Length: 574
Image (cartoon, rainbow, N blue to C red; front, side):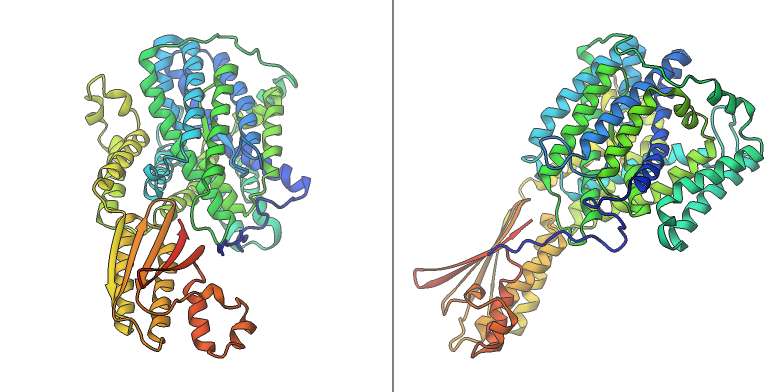
């Protein structure tokens, strides 16, 4: 019978994905998520500045971003359904679309950005339907590398702001640094040493301290408060105000942005699955596929309403890890609040005036969790030399975009769409190298052993070597190794143990199968009662336990006799 581990909420999670926290907690958590999401509103502002747009256009992009992000965030939380991963994975205007949007904006203005973003959404919807079949192209070392690169790519945005550096302040100053340090210290201390529910509100408490200190030190002034007071209570933005346009030559850079965004979403949603299940072993691809489809619908909304491309927010997932609250109910509340903010400029102004060092402190705080999440995803698999190069070379090339930008500035025009950001470069490198190193790799291996103590080490070494070559999940390899050794132990207890046992292991990204051939009596743990009392009552209790343990971890097992040989099959889901 299949052995299917049940989801188990980890001890560090206070409210899991299926839990229903009170509306008070949902609203406060939603506010924290919106404060973190407001970091993404920097990208529309940068875009408008770079293409020579007006402040009114920047305000328009932010309002439309709130509408589209609210819709995408609520769709992402739907479970079960054809759209949405079922997890708290808020959306935001991500860095993956910045370079492509800049190219479109400088070529054809806002209309071209919006039209190409809609095209990007259509391609992402198609990709979401194919991703389950393409899982072998995106193993953990690829998705983990992308998540890690996303975290690294945000460092240049977060660290300068932590020191108070922005367009108005080109060098660090003492007071902004004190605000950043105080905000970060409060969030970290509440997360590490607080008791009760204070940890839930670590970000919002840190921000209150940061805002108060900013006002006391003169970083915020009366002008900032006046901006809130003078903003209207209610205003409906005009949909389609700037129109839509399309150009064929921009398809490639937007496809590259879409692919980076989709792989980032795969990594983010894998992280969501991992943090919500203590027994997590492998990505659940249906959830990820539907989650990418929710991102696609979000991008269609962005293009139609008038905004930049969006994707899942690694920072907000980091916030979920930090606070221990991952309930999907908060996705609905956060999305609804964003829809409200989009038509209530007075409330939106609170986020617009956020001091620079507070933004930086929040980014440093949540990126600490996301960097470790990327490393955790990568190290969930056994890693051999080729996979070392997949990860190492991709990280080096991704980082080189920031360390040696002149190299990519000199790239030929046809290559520039693929060399527009460190995330794009690292993502493409990881995919290409993974495909290259998989070429010629045999998905089958055979080991012949003699039952006995020495065989156990042979099996363990063999499985570790093959598991690393295949990039198999560590836990699955451990379970298969344990079962194979227990089969050998059971065979050694037979009246006439077989002289040779042939073990054939076959692997793909979804399955690990062990076929064992020998001459002798059948070994099938399924024939014994699977309760401790039933095993203890068996006349040969030790042998019964050994046989039971030999198939304990297999998702199913089968025994048949072929040409005077016993053929035992152990199957493990991967």
